[in-house]
Image 1 (cartoon, one colour):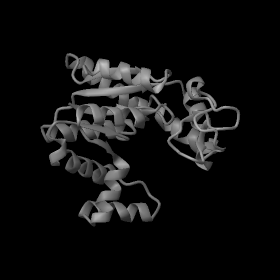
Image 2 (cartoon, rainbow, N blue to C red; image 1 turned 135 degrees about the horizontal axis):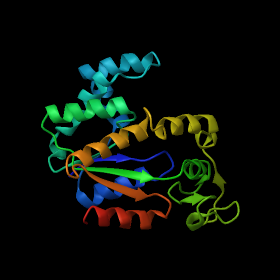
Image 3 (cartoon, rainbow, N blue to C red; image 1 turned 45 degrees about the vertical axis):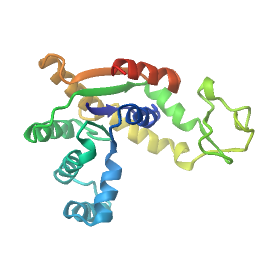
Image 4 (cartoon, helix red, strand yellow; image 1 turned 60 degrees about the vertical axis):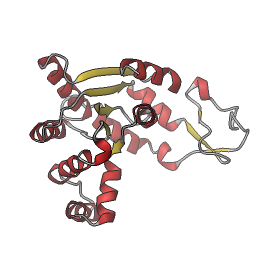
Length: 227
């Protein structure tokens, strides 16, 4: 199965993507990793992308989409893939759809993690890192993993915050792009929903309620994926 995965920062999309990867044995492909891999290997596209990045500019779609297509053609993608982090806007959605069709690659499923903007922001700002183990989940805004006062709920260790988790301006900027239904990421989601409506439910659209805990969300997701 070939999957596009959408969700705002703070929705737990990365966690759910890892679960899908494990259950179905398909690669979880993130655009940031594709960039770093191409740059480190010194590919033609990677060198072009590096030039833009070094100048502090956005890498154009004319470079990003061919990089993604190259990745989707690798051997580990033969049985499917889950693409995460692209497209981020309506134009990219249109260009990606066009490129996939030109390559004869069918998109099977679009997953949207649905979460209110304020809840997503709270979840980011509420994350607390245990000094003993970063994998001990603590979040002051999520009842199921709320810390024990100012101590880790699992081991009692001290808790700290990541500086970028507390950067409201940066969070708001990312969310402004995601929740934009005119040209942003939500417009991209709606583009694929319109395609599905026009083509008899292809790709299949899965709306996923991002409010419950990780286990509840993954149970719903795997059920809707037929696993």
